[in-house]
Image (cartoon, rainbow, N blue to C red; front, side, top):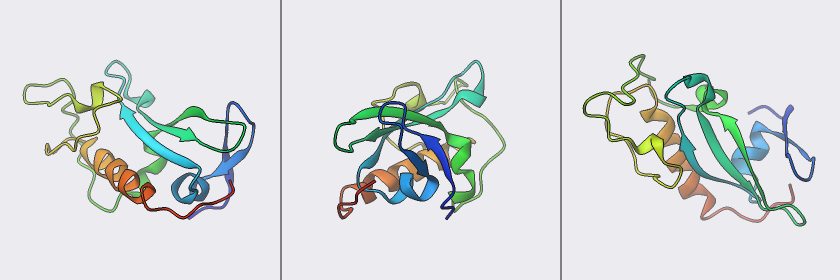
Length: 124
């Protein structure tokens, strides 16, 4: 994992690395949404639960592509017949069973959510 700082918290200003975002107990993923008009704006949403912060920030799901441990399909099925539309709602965190480009990202999000429930405290 990269220790390079590349995301600044919009409220408290702390710089976070991908490692911080994936491992820090004070950063937790809360969901994922897709922009069906321009898929370059597909986002993971994170809470930064550091003291004196408590904000939510987003990162493009493609920033995490190298951490996906399965093949990523090329086909985008979002909004197509058979699409379960999980990615259209931030609060819908269910997995997608389709062979869609975004399904592996939802499984990655699910793994991060399950992991965050048992993370030891950290100071980021």
